[in-house]
Image 1 (cartoon, helix red, strand yellow):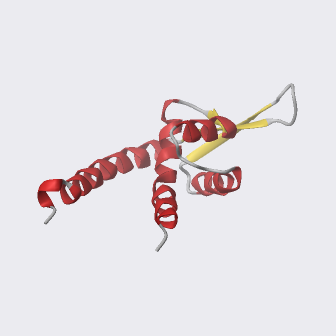
Image 2 (cartoon, one colour):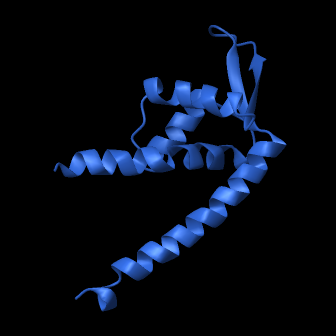
Image 3 (cartoon, one colour):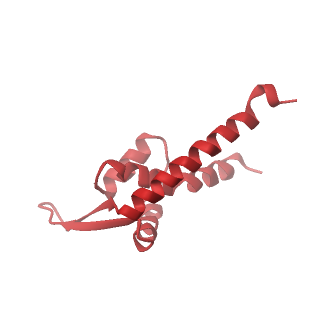
Length: 112
């Protein structure tokens, strides 16, 4: 079993949560989302994020607006919907519970 495959699966599992978290403070352009994720060492490529943004939008968690750009095509800015904000709150709660559980299970006092 290759560690890189497991690490990639772990990152994929939290990517939606991270994207929604990036948008919690306001709208963002796709390249801004990608840069924030890359700065946090979440290795994501454009080919991964665009389908994910579309899926989140189709689920009613995101909305977007077009803005004209002086240097090229119009830009699509994403933001959380009310449903997306509620979903993010629930994910935060689940993440905290999961993090606590993993910390308990992986702590040295529980290793035999």
